[in-house]
Length: 481
Image (cartoon, rainbow, N blue to C red; front, side):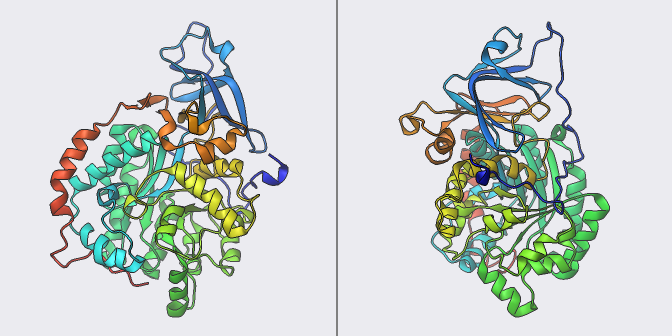
């Protein structure tokens, strides 16, 4: 990796704020020679970050885990005689920091394939929002279980979710072992109660599941949440030390409509309502325009953007997230899938490859975005985007033991001339063999250990006729930007 490939660190206007709840990253936990480690993963190649955050690889290595924290990264030979309660022989595999899905709607897997080949407005108004008016808490729980199973199998160890009936999602997270950043979505059409419910959820679940759950306030978007509610949300965020997660400038049409109606872009609305003075995660941002860049540059909080490129291609949006311009401002861009109702999958590997390819095409430059830069977005930048800087995103002493093992022995990943390129452009989600969160093995050799998928699929199938009914003529909201 040349110096020009190295992603720039966030500037002073966007400091990294590790979350306050449980599990602060600290020093490694040294142990006496007789005390066994909880887990040793040995014989693998480990993706590491050097002092300048460049991607490096250590071959024939071992990762030692104690109390859910990475104790050390050492050689396989040095770990050979180390006592351990559990060992994984990972020869032929690569250990990566667990992937982070920085923006999704997990329960929407229940709507996968229901609204196809439609423009955005029809997708929302004619199918998705009418169907979502049928949702029960049980539907949300089943969708979340299926989504979590898909993400565990695809090497995702943390996801940021923004949806309804989020108590059910939090319960699934606690059950299945994933890490999650959760927000209860609301619209201004719900009145003050929607905003209050979002706050109550965030305070009730902050630090839950042994610290694996962090929370955010979750107004839906500037076109469904008015300025008064956004201003109140910013005030609540400051008062309670909470971040904000919302959609904004999702596409260029939204930006054009906002300028015509309000004389301001969605990003400018976030500034004037105080949202950019909070720690905010902006979903999509393909409608961010040149005039928005100085606004983002002077934001007072930690600003991040989540990009989910597959959905943009499906909706035929003319622009994509301006990753390069945001990078130049020091704004982290995390990788995401959005919900499976629009994206059809929760495959962050695909998001990583598409981000690299689409950025090359958009910029007209094959040197941007490189495979190593894509891996940086998938690891450290994604961790920063969801407020987990210093906690996740790298395999290093003191970080939580969130890692995945990827098998590169298949014919589609051989031979390996450039390991970063193989991981980004050749490997697939199905090459993930093992997924570990907080040192707990959630999948081993492709066997899910915390979720019963056949039972979920069976019950969800029984409930689908009632869920997808649109004969009632209702919708939870209207898409009219």
